[in-house]
Amino acid sequence: MPTLSEMTHEERSALYDRTYAQYEAMKAKGLKLDMSRGKPGLEQLALSDEMLNMYIDPSETKVDGVEARNYGELMGLPACRRLFAELLGVKYEQVFVGGSASLELMYDVIAKAFTHGLLHSPEKWAKLDKVKFICPAPGYDRHFTICETFGIEMITVPLLEDGPDMDLVEELVKDPCVKGMWCVPKYSNPDGVVYSDETVYRIANLKPAAPDFLLMWDNAYCVHEFDGPFVPFANILEACRLAGNPDMVFEFASTSKITFPGAGVSCFCCSEDNMAYMKKLWNAQIISYDKLNQLRHVKFFGNAAGVLAHMKRHAAVLKPRFDIVLETLEAEIAPLGIASWHKPKGGYFVSLNVMEGCAKRVHALCREAGVVMTGAGATFPYKNDPKDSNLRIAPSFPPTDELTLAMQVLCLAIKLAALEKLQTID
Ligand SMILES: Cc1ncc(COP(=O)(O)O)c(C=O)c1O
Figure 1 (cartoon, rainbow, N blue to C red):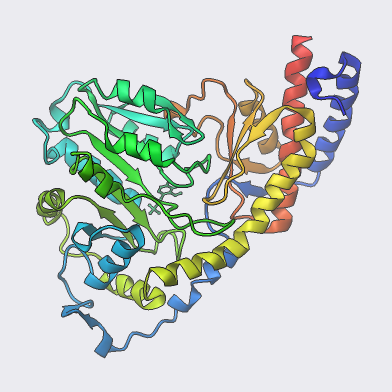
Figure 2 (figure 1 turned 90 degrees about the vertical axis):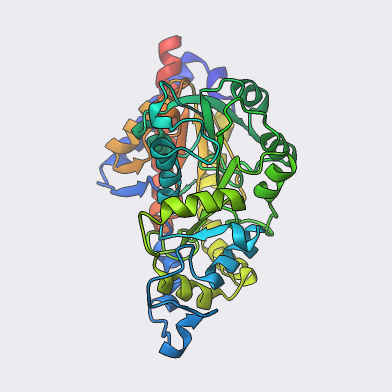
């Protein structure tokens, strides 16, 4: 079969008519399908249902001398801190367990940089004319929203197969206004990229001009493989320490996509010096987080091995969904040569690059046919995808029959948009 660009004008016209008729037939079904957010599906949520009815005997609420039912221990239940320390391969002293959302902790760290300054800040960021952040893209839209809300200027850096374009990053950090960088080092959202050891090394060894450069290491998908064995990851805190940058990094993680999003447990990790500084600031805003939920998580998992075993159960639910997405794209789109996509082994997304200038059109066609996808451009700072090409597919939430239909609609939309583009060039 010829690719779309190899076809004659007439062949493309005929294909357009056929595809359009199929699209109209899909539209007539009055579909209402959602592939927009990376939310676990019902089957995944059910994997943690034991926690809903978990009985905690009053004799169990005092752990390591800490009463989980009462105020106290700002940094979290020691047993829960130990669990995260083991999972992330960091020291117990470096872990702060917070509430139910790591995004809130990320927001808070940046907010504190503005209101109080970080450990090595010569000045609160709020006093500065300009604060810039390096934003590898495609990336997580909510990171970019945090930047926007604080008026941080975002510098887009391409995310390559092995992580951010480090040649560019090393140049950019020479600017003292560049105060930070977002990283999702394992199964990045949305490309599913795992940073290589060399990239991690180069990041840890950065020589930023800003003494308070803030590496936002969002390890949201650290144990989230759905295909193949667990992939170990670097201890970024230790890598930064060895590089002479011990206080540059804050690492974040949560159980949002392990137990219940919005009702899980989150943490941040940083050097002990940073922790002492942050603890003082945090002490002004909360007495202590929900230690009963922390206790529930500890009881549910036991240890890191328990978490990994649980993730295998998630994988069994997720893998078939990713297979539907990848097999449909392979069958419908690959022969036409009009899009490329990543084949992730973990995380929550498939990152799709349609023909340049077509992502918005594909998104609109999907929407008209009742399929909701993350907005075109959302994966870039300022929602500005310079090529108008990237779309994020989130296969976890819809039931498999709905996902199959949604993918059919998406493929029709990809074809129509590409044909429309090529016919106007003709
Ligand atoms: C990269 C990344 N970080 C953070 C989050 C949100 O994490 P939390 O629920 O812990 O705030 C998500 C959710 O999709 C994500 O993709």
